[in-house]
Amino acid sequence: MCLALPARIIELRENESAVVDLGGVRKEISLALVVGAEVGDYVIVHAGYALSKLDTGEAEATLRLFAELGEARADTGNVP
Image 1 (cartoon, rainbow, N blue to C red):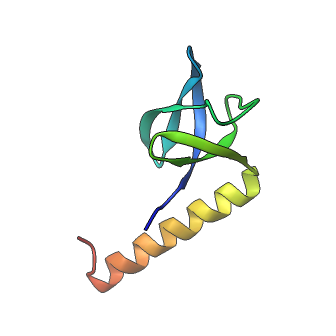
Image 2 (cartoon, rainbow, N blue to C red):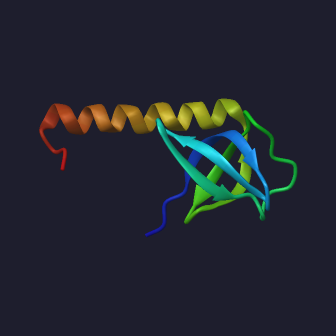
């Protein structure tokens, strides 16, 4: 199974790379597959590559769902 996550670009770097915020974790990724991404944009990230830009509202809704899922798992004691 593959999972791609929404992440917000917080810094652009040389050679088509950027730093993104993944729920408080900062990670350097490649922007080679995405044209026109800017600081503040949300991108879908998989295996260190941004696959596409994502609408801000859609990204924030997805991140809220992930947070709710984590809270639900914590409430049931199913947190690894």
